[in-house]
Structure formats: C-alpha cells, structure tokens
Amino acid sequence: MNDITVIKFGGSLTKNKDAQKKFIKELAEISKTQKIVLVHGGGPEINNLLSRLNIESKFVNGLRYTDEQTLEAVEMALSGKVNKMLTAELISCGVKAVGISARDGAIAVCDVKKELGFVGEPVKININLIETLINGGFFPVISSVGMAEDTRALNINADTLATNIAISFKAAKLIFLTDVAGVLDKDKKTIQEIKINEVDNLIKTEVITGGMIPKINSCKQAVEKGVKEVLIVDGVSGIKKLNGTVIKN
Image 1: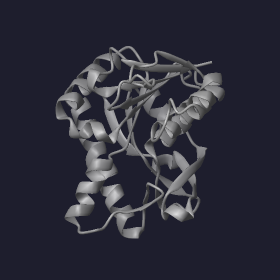
Image 2: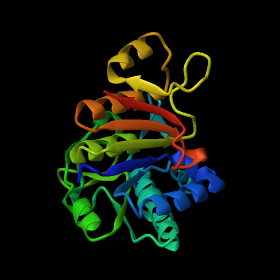
Image 3: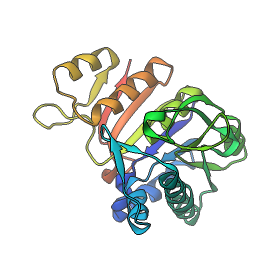
Image 4: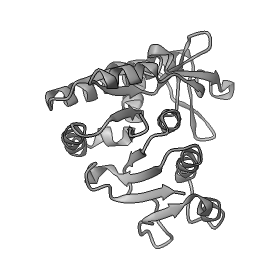
C-alpha cells in the first residue's frame, strides 16, 4: 500500500465551483491508474451553517474553538454535506467513491485539545477500513471528523489528518491542494523544491510565514516519517499539472 497517494482538498476550494469541477474530473481520470485517498475539510461550509444556525464562531489564537453546538454543525457540514457532495461528484464521473469520516472504523483516534474544545489531535490511525475499501476497488473520501478514546466526535484539522494517514501508509505522495501556487519566496515566486533540512531556515528568515508554517511543518514531519514526497500545489490549476512546491529528503 506504499504506492498510495493521499490528497488533501482544501475547504477554500469548495467556494470555487469551476476549480472543484475541474479537480473532480481530473481526479476521476487519475484514479483509474493510481490508488488515491481523498481527505477534505470545509471551513466555508462550516461558517455558512453556523451563520444560518445563529451560532457565533469563536477563535483561540486564530484556531476555531469547537463547543458542543459548533461540533454538531461541523459534523453536519463536513460529513453530511461536503463529503457526500464530493463523493457524488466522483461517482458521476464513473468512480466507485465511498464517503466516510475518520470516525468510521475508528480511523482517527485522538487526544482532546481541551483549550480548543471538541478538537482532536490524532494519536492512533487505523488504516484497516481504508485498505479494505481500496482492495475492494473503492475510492475512499474521508471527512476530517475523528473520535476520542470514549468515541465522542472530534473536529480535526484536515491537514493534520491527511498527514497522519499518509504517514501510516508510508505513502508515495501527500498532496495539499490550496488556493496558492505552493510555497512562495520573498518575490512571491513559487519555490519549486524544498529539502526538509531547509525548512527551519526558511521559517527563521521569514520566507515562510503565517498559515504556511504549520503546513510546511506537516510536510517536513511526513517526509521524516516515511512519505516519499509532499507537494503543496495550486488547486485551481487542477491535479494533473501539480503547479507548486515539492518537499522531499
């Protein structure tokens, strides 16, 4: 199973229907010759649902605080809407897609990050269900809702979930689809390749800043733990061209 590609579909791309349609079409084509696991978030859909339910979004140091009400909305938006939408679109392209969450089969068992409420940090990844689906010819589409040891639902950062699943498989590739063309240098040009021993210096010299820091650290962690290469690519360009940055040893 180390020939698997794990793809994380960024929630921001769900707002761009043309980009999403192109991605699904290309992904369906690629999945005929490659084993792929798709992991997704869905921040915009969560925000829309919270707004409709008149639930105020709360943040702690820029991270969403997930109370019990918010957790219900998160699970509804991610597992109930985005997951089923992506799954249905893949099926319409002839793919045997199956939509599940990381709660199913206890795929992601997490410690609770109490400072953020019902938010989980994966401590155990069970890949049996994913393997069973792939071996049966199915395409797993996984929403970033996991579980605590006591089986309560927990909101998981989708980048973190994708990284942990890729590490568990020692995947050939981990691809983060974003709304930017990879990691940019100080002139806003894409850095084509980054070695993991260069990451700390790029952060220290503030070439990599803000929200790209946790993403690049996830990339580094994945490569250190056996993933062959990680890519941060522009999702609007699709999944065939892979316009962006590759991170490797």
